[in-house]
Length: 272
Image (cartoon, rainbow, N blue to C red):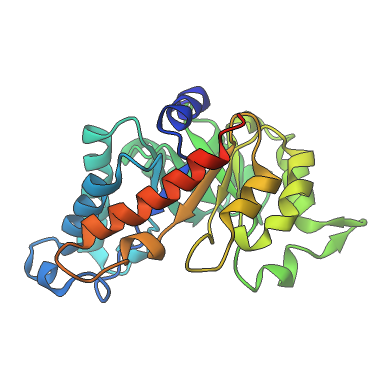
């Protein structure tokens, strides 16, 4: 999906909601455990119920890798289902990869070509040659970890180097990499006040913003500091939507939660 197509969908749906498919067998309704592939059945139900309110879906690959071969199969079935039935939705492999160049090339091939995700999250710590292989693939996006929502983000990401905080340095340097127009950035909703500074560096880039909902981030604050003329935000909610209920009508309740967020987003977009 091109950036232009993503923007078109955002304005068509009046939504910039990304739903995280962090599917945990210990949290899904117990009756699904008797299914041959309970992870996929849960995901399918969530997707079918919420797709009209969402613009993107983000499976965190750890929740699938933890189940070995069965987990990878469920992940592959999930992305195939999305691509075949809802091709207008943006898909994110939340894999947080990043390694030496030839290894990154294989990660890029795995997630962006073989599994056909629209994007993948990447850690920038190893620098240019660990990220550029992801950027070589046309009409795909690399979402760089910039300022994350966890408490430990302050251990390194906000430290100063040459009077510049490290997360700012990462974003600034990344703009010099080949095909950097294909970059997006992860910025946690719990760090909303930093978004204004980030927008000074990348005014037009898309930001993936986790942490709204269960982690305490404020949607209104995120939009106040981070929204641009094209919205420029993919705000992720995982637990607050997919685990809203453990009952047999869990998907219906998840849809209701997603609709509430979509309406809030539409209201916040009213001046665009």
